[in-house]
Image 1 (cartoon, rainbow, N blue to C red):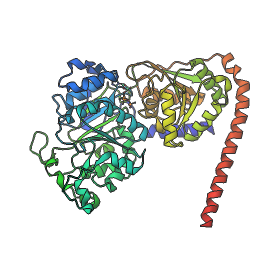
Image 2 (spheres, rainbow, N blue to C red):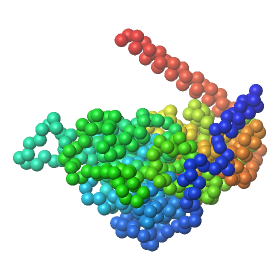
Image 3 (spheres, rainbow, N blue to C red):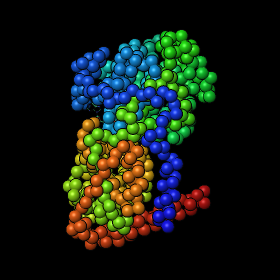
Length: 522
Ligand SMILES: Nc1ncnc2c1ncn2[C@@H]1O[C@H](COP(=O)(O)OP(=O)(O)OP(=O)(O)O)[C@@H](O)[C@H]1O
């Protein structure tokens, strides 16, 4: 039974994942710029770099730019002059965030008046917070202000951060009904998640994308997979010249006092812009596993896109990543995991499971192993944002050594010092493997990824890794004494887990019952 299910799954995956040899359908994807021909470039020799940006970069520990950053710099600030939209497919941890953040900050540093000119969209709050930190580290040195729209604070607080009300001058009387006329953006750059972005587009007075020059779609394949209230067509519509907006309320609030500040998009005759709006909205799209699906990429309306990728293979793992497999019986998986964690001696580690439920169960179980002496916490989409943020902070600071996580939350997560990633459940796709494993071996560091495998999964896992041109995945063995030594605790931990899960379920039932009674009483 299990075997036939595996076969069915394998068949499905084959259908969903094109082989690594597949040639991209889109012509512009067939002649990419290979980022690996570039070398690190010290800040001192980086052409055109605004001298004000050197100090903040150095205090971030950056003394030279990584290859992908040099390549993007060439195509944006350098001779490429942002003439083409840029699509970047570069491994996890290769520095994609700074690859777009630095050119945007550098270019906007010459702006005369403040208005919202760059929008960066990310799929999750945690990622948006992380990216905002990068902008916030460099932008103020160039006199630029960065905002965040993720729904972390109340919408009123967010509006107060994003929209500035000019001080009333003595003797001038404003019509309070017409206050929208006086609203201005308080930020030059906005980092947002799609949902909150749409809230501001639809209802925040004074929020306008009229002056937008740069749109970054980070983790593109993830963002294009879900419509998120049609955020992309909406943004593109609102940044088109003389758009006839779907959103009358947005038109109503376009601040007429901006007059001279307006980014007037007109039909261009400049090179490459014939009959296209100019200045056009420059788009930068990025991922470690960029989609090659023409219908998905078509949604972005890219302008003469330039494809930057690393090497020939579509999927690439970080150079200093070591992959290992650990053979184990299904029933004893937790025991193998405990032995592995113990052998890693408290090094920072992320354990991936296949779902939020198994994340919760596994984390609860691990915490019953008193002799593990490692702080283990759960990190999943089931938790409240505040809980997740607290956990992430403690993990960053080293108070927690092991995070047990589901996939949804981990794309792009950048935590220093993660030495190991463990796939407790085998990743279903090579893309998943890449994003999970990519939490380690970042920024040229070394790292290890262990995958716990049942016999029946071995063949499929091998095929999966071949898609990333990786044949090297030796078996990692653990001493049987080490595994056996945890067996008695394992049995009692399983009992405790059963009790905990039952009492959690009955608590949930009671709460549900209480609410249904309250509903009836209304
Ligand atoms: N030029 C640089 N010098 C030193 N460290 C850098 C440099 N650029 C980026 N880093 C560091 O490398 C790490 C990875 O960067 P970043 O998060 O941008 O990677 P990424 O390519 O976006 O990865 P992912 O695909 O997983 O999102 C970060 O900790 C960042 O601070």
